[in-house]
Length: 216
Image (cartoon, rainbow, N blue to C red; front, side):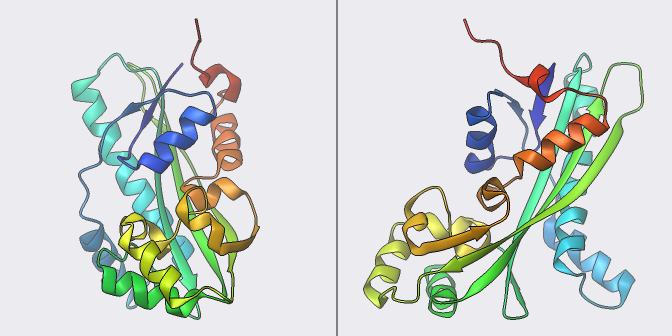
């Protein structure tokens, strides 16, 4: 059975590959800021972190499902969409994008514990049938070392790694040395919870091991 990852995230692609799955990848064409703004306007205020990551994950997966119908009409398998955000001290952080913002966040995060929220939207797609969807939000708390120096923060930011990841950190690469504890499924912090994806696949009648890519 095939898998399509509705994301261009290298971390999410790496996760699936490490889990034995070689997916088709299609980048969703979704204006995340516009989706979030419309939801906030309809609600009369910002959405809680868990609701927002799930909303965006669903929008991304749905966009790719629609495009698959036209571009890959014979696709038979799962489409996986995800979104992540980091909450600390009552504030929600997506990607920092600039060195200045990443540096500011790291000065706030050292010695603290925050929560990484990851939304998951999985669609069962098969030719001639309507897609079925299963969704869930996973979360994991992340604690940062208190003695991280300003020089270490500057060097990490200069690496470019934290600029385009939720919360401005990774757990599976250069940022891992500054993290002292993860409470929850560690893969949640990388970008998607593999245990959550397995459960959602099962909810859609798919056995996880059937998704493993055959190896010669």
